[in-house]
Amino acid sequence: MAFLHYFIKKVIYYFLHIFWIFPIRKNRIFLLNELSFKYGDNLKYINEYLNDHFENTYDVIFPLYDKKEALDNNLKYVKPFSLSYFMFLVSSSIIITNAGGVSYIPIRKKQLVINTWHGGGPYKKTGGTLFQDKWYLRELKMQRKNVKYMLSSCKICTDEENKAMLYENDSCLPFGMPRNDIFFNKSLSLRKKVFDLYNIDDTVKVVLFAPTFRSNPTDFTDSKKYHVSDMDYEKLLKALKQKFGGSWKLAIRLHPKLKNVEIDVPNALNFTDYPDMQELLYISDVVITDFSSLMWDFSLTNRPCFLYADDIDEYERERGFYMPSNKWPYPIARNNTELINKIETFDFEKYQQDVTNHHEECGSYEKGIACESIINMIKTNLA
Image 1 (cartoon, one colour):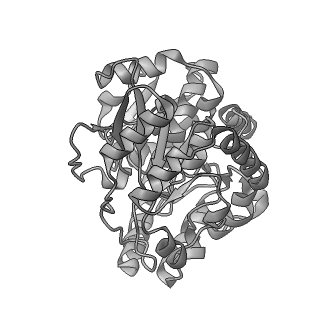
Image 2 (cartoon, rainbow, N blue to C red):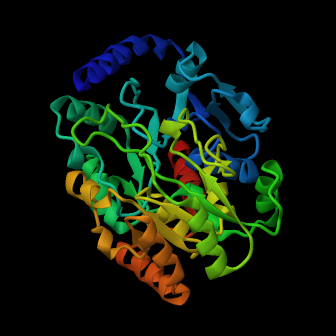
Image 3 (spheres, rainbow, N blue to C red):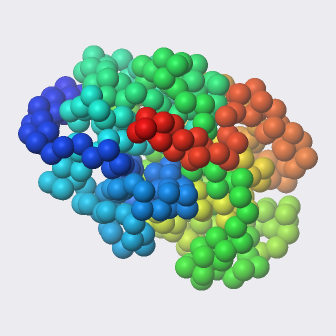
């Protein structure tokens, strides 16, 4: 499969040279949410910063499967992998992606490609650190050749994760994640927006369960389906009420790669189709994940984050983390009994200090100015 994956991308790469007939537009910026083609992640926040500070200055292209998701008259929407998509892609002076989906693009000398990546913190290993298949490594080199800069969320990412993606330290931009700027701003209207959409009473507290997906540790093209959790949701809600008070509602958000997996949990809210994960984190009072990097994002709120992962020991042996899980600040439970115990004995003051220490140990770059920093760098390159 890895060979076929590489071969197809090579064929597309050579075919797309035909689009070089279209001249590069100096102020055209192509925002590529390659994970889901939804109006979200780092690309949404970069676009909103452009709107707030440089309205009508740039010609911004945003590929979406569903154009109804974003109501921005300043954007040009294109259907992913259409002829217009490739024409705009090859003629944009700036391409910003959040994944490795640029390896098949024949980049020209006057084009600048920036990868914001889609996860922060020293957690799941990626790239060449994990997959040693020669065809994967060849594809990784294709992607690295096209990208000039990659954003980094912390010093450990610069030293370890980005190295796994073949980036040198001077290619890594210490800006933090643009999508995490949201956690440095207050927005009462955002909570109302989400609560109104899902008909949630404004007195209710929300616990968000957002597990990651599992991939074959030897083949990056093979992703397992949803890891079935045996979490006892009724006991979870009861424990949260006893510990933190108030009335609680469970919401579930699956990874974009698992968007077609059916959620069969009575009375749970299905947040999987909501385009912007950061907004869901922003309005959540407690988050439970397994080892998704969203724990890094949510830690910026200083609200409680618990890890429920019955397979974390197996995962750590097979795939590994950049920082051992026993050094993370988040309480880890491997079964329902442990999860309830972690909630009942949760020390909020200690947790906040542990999170602060974690950010310091990782060398966090998150300051709430990532969008500003990346746009300033773009302006310099376009000058």
